[in-house]
Image 1 (cartoon, rainbow, N blue to C red):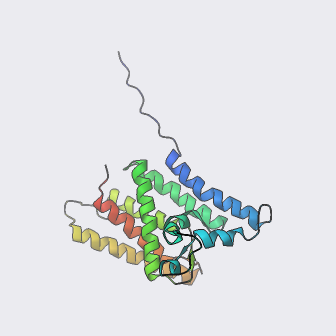
Image 2: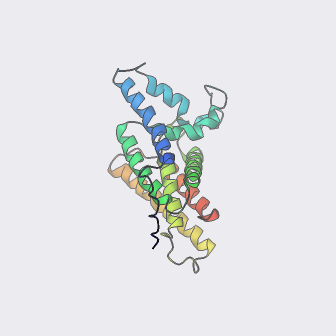
Image 3: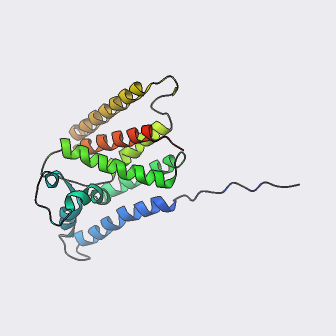
Amino acid sequence: MTQSAPPPTRPWLPFSITLLLTLCIVPELVLQLTDHGMLGPHDLRSTAFRYGAFQSDLISGGKVLFEGQSFTIFVTYMFLHTGLQHLVVNMIGLVWLWRLILEQRSAGDAALLYLMSGVGAALVFALFGPQHTAMVGASGGLFGLLGVYGVDSRLFWSDVNRTGLLQKVGRLVLIAVILVLSDLVSRVAIGTSVAWQAHTGGFLTGAFAALIWPRR
């Protein structure tokens, strides 16, 4: 009598998400050490923000610190955070959403969608966000993964066959409007400095990308 082999177990933290976590956590840990005078110059955080944070005025002709900075900031801002609380909240969301995405897609697909969402978030922030303001954080990419998961899992529409493309697009826009309103309410009620433009841009980028690029 033959016995079937047990299904392969998936590691709790795949290499792809471990790499992303490392790219986000290590810079903040270094900046924490410099903030407390334990390592390097005390103004390293402000220097890192000048070089890596997303700044809309650099896109519209502002003075860059190095050649190509107006392009690199579309990615580098995702790996910088304003402090430990900002980092921890985003990393918890990243691990949670990443594992949900991997139920439907490969790690390579998830990484590409995450980066696309982050770039889309920055684009919308550049169009509708305040000038002379630095933006950092992984939340734009996280909202993109939320959009991907909502499309892949059919969370946003239960009956795919009876929900047309225009209905899907309209529903995604409606959800994006709700996200904007919730961000604005939290800003007024709690006083949080959230970039609703980036959250909305990331969500729509991820959702529309998942809609055009079906799950495997």
